[in-house]
Image: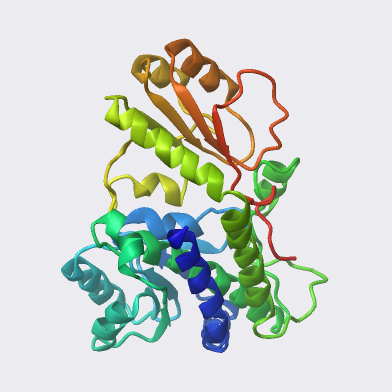
Length: 350
């Protein structure tokens, strides 16, 4: 569990940086109140995908593209994504030319290089990168740094909301579409930057970000203490399938996970299925691809894709499930289960 322990250490260490994050959030909030825009950018799409049209995320957030026209009033959160240094710096140059406020999130070495080019604000993604943790990924740090980037991003998002509350504003935010009524609720607010009226009190610096770090730290600790055995068993089964000539077919929920296939450090042990339709992979694709001796690895959210499981059973493939659901669905049941401890509704702060 060295990998999870390293991520937990990164989360715990971020608490010491809350004052810096809160101060940066004040700068961003000031621009948003003055009608500036907030955009997310990264060379690879993984970082941007996590904060754009995302449950719990800001509806006013936009995705930067090469066609985007920025103004000096805007804010761009630029996330390191493990691309080549030339690509990362080229994107930074393009953003800097607009005069927008650039907030960079990434490892210290990246920040040191970028600071020479006039980055406005830098939020470091500090996480232990011991050899025991990076060795399975060929020494690559991306599989850890990329996750720490997201922890920083969501901590920063919480502090931006808090900073806006101190200006009397409450930004419109997405609710998880799996919550009853959420789609209709979201549709009412799409296109809105702020709620015209609200009863949210002014929140002090560090409170929302700190609550988020507490919640994420608790989830990681629960994984280490309660799911280590399940994770080890699944790892052993996956290795056996590969050694026997089988294929691991991975169905992964959208946003960040789908971009991990082929990312820096990925040993390519799994074959990624097409992006999920809701909470299920394509049944037609599974019927076409799954063979006896294969393994269907499902990284979802809450509900089991029962049709997909039926296809796997008919094909003679084993099933690994990583969801938060309560396991009350009928047959077919998965062979192995890892509970990610993520709360239904995607809400860890109130």
